[in-house]
Length: 428
Image (cartoon, rainbow, N blue to C red):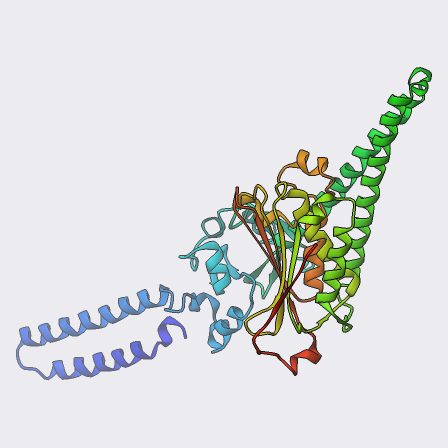
């Protein structure tokens, strides 16, 4: 609706004409003059009010006059608000419409702003200026950094709705960039972790090639032991990398095999008790009776248990117990595995990053104790593979508690056992 086709203005003019005719019938010059002046003031006031209304934005935040005939469609605003990504419509370098996502990103007042004031981002302003008077390739993507937050990255596409309106669409690709950074970091870290022991092996082999060193049996034995340890470290790292790759490759495969989780855990702990690590004697395993099965891959679950318990054995203080417990959750729909140690504990700022590949709280200590930096990452992926949940809580000086929740098998869901639970403890 244009200014002069306004229904309100048309009715006002009709009333003014009728009023003028009536004023002409009034006796007396001054009375008629006053009546006509009052009518003129009313008409001018309506015209001015109509002009202001025409230039104002409507309550929904859109500039309807510039957007005509788009705004005539009753569902236009609902349509653009249904788009999850920021979407703006620009006419004559001014934002005339935007969805809620765009308003949240760029902050109000947005409608009616010049593009420079709306975006406050030189790269965006330059791209919009470049596309103002030239054909636009809708497949052309502009990568924008720092719009919104400094670390955010966006894909910006610009297209023409008609010869007056341009549409700007923004897609947040920050998550994709983060994944790519993780991939690059992983390759760099894996290369570093493999090259470090390889460099040691190479150096000691060259040393053993020296005739004087080769004839010294004590020195030769010492160097050969170091070479063997470094080679074993490389082997452990490669095995963990292969396991991680295998888990990720099979993340969408169905695993419906029923596993006797308590029995499997008991077997894994017994193998640790009988191993070369003397800390095995400190493991205390407690489990509920009549535990349900878990649907999953038994070998992966065994690896998960061994990694968690071995990690606690590595960092627990000497002669302190390592408590391993299996029980049902309150709803009995999941199995809870907890591993508690009494080590030095972990500062709270490190806990969110413990499951990152190659992340170490104390790099020197971890390597000295034989860690590859992939143990907890493997555990996390195995738990996710089995639709479970991992929680790590720790306090410096008070040790660490790791809690793992795993859903019980579908078969056992039909017979949830809520009876009182007896416990048994496996001794040394």
